[in-house]
Image 1 (cartoon, rainbow, N blue to C red):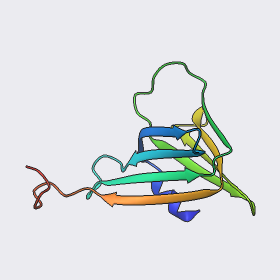
Image 2 (cartoon, one colour):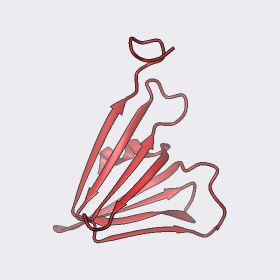
Image 3 (cartoon, rainbow, N blue to C red):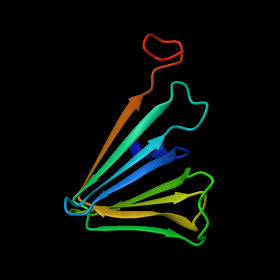
Length: 114
C-alpha cells in the first residue's frame, strides 16, 4: 500500500488495542522539522492477530518507523512495522485499514498558537 510509505520516519505516539472490538489504532507524528507537521491515525479493523516484538527490554528513546511492509490476500492484510531496525516492531493481521491524515496548524497561523 503506497499510502503507508508516508509513515516511514514518523514517530509512534501511541497504540490502542480494542480486544473485544478487534481493532488497533496507531497514532503517528511526522518527523521533526516537517512543515506543516502531520498527525496520522491508522485504524486497523477486523484484527485477528497483533504482536509487538523487541530484542531489547529497555525502553526506546524514540519510536521512529523505519519500514512498513504489507502483504495481502483476498480476505486479510498483514502489516509489519519496524522501528529503527529489524529487531523491534509491530505486526498486525486485519481485514481493513483506514489512514487519516491531519495537518497541524502552522505556528503563528490564526488559532495555531503563539
